[in-house]
Length: 451
Image 1 (cartoon, rainbow, N blue to C red):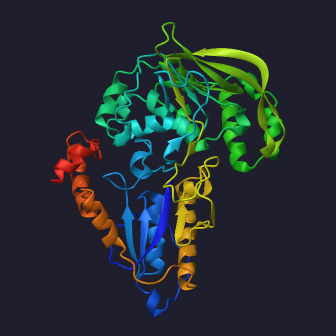
Image 2 (tube, rainbow, N blue to C red):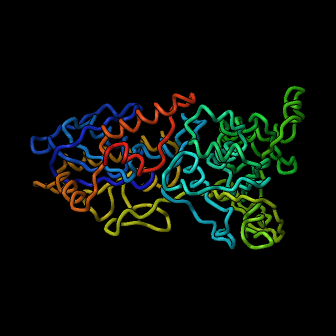
């Protein structure tokens, strides 16, 4: 869902690509002239945005030739690397970078992004050297979205419940040794502004061996305020309100009383500094500014009250947002917004170049949003093709890329070779009852393929 661009390359053949299941596409189909019947399209990035765009193009223009390029030795982007292993049905995030906290102390050991932590337990090669230290009692997650809840749930879930997921062997080993007992999720605003969804919240409330910690004071007067909010937000807030203020039933009370771990939401708090340990060698807490809300509805913002408080912890995970990276100096990029300037997916001032996913619209939405967005980008490309707005004439296409890679000594991994890696992972997982044991070392992958 992050940096996904499509370049019109001219004419050539394409290696057949298997597309993942998706929803229906619009029923119309363009009719193309003879000279438009064999276009080749290059897709950069094999995540959902790339695959869904390719799917739409091939469905609407069966004669099109599509090449998909991916920097990793394996395909599928966030579907493989960005989803909590105990939530294989959820595909909700995947930009290439995270937003920095921009506060003193964030460079200390013990501080990392939630994105890197997710990549670590999901087997993303670039995050395998993360080695998070879970020897502390308390972890703080800065952010109150679904990614933050994902990370909190993984930290607190009994390891035996993760054994039959596709979490990496190394991550599971570290989690087995974890001493983390309490996780705080910190947000600048209040209960009405949390970014997670009710499904994820309900699962956290019912997490085995863990109990929720919510301060009833944070919910004073909220009952009247939620009467006019949209139904999904109302249901979410009502669940928070009940959890914070109502006495649990006998069974739930007994479950909470026996819980050895806990998680809580700290509202109206903005991080100001990561506090160092006495020897200055690692994180030991977070200094928070107490905030209050000003404005109404979408204009609501958190402003500091002048009060401060320190929250001790040994692990700090930032989950305050994601951003895409520039693709190439030749591709326009808005560093402030983290997007490629575009109009309906058409990259501004670069005819023949298109974009989709978070690099098109910013880090918002889930996989269904990306699917629709990608279909629309594909539709724009096809409209331009039909209207004769794309560069014409013979171009080298894949042959030029193949020659360039060869000159650099790069041997690409084909989709059929990925299928061999896929089979190897599945076979390794069978012995332990897992759906797969992910390969995390690119060099091992290449050795298995004989590269």
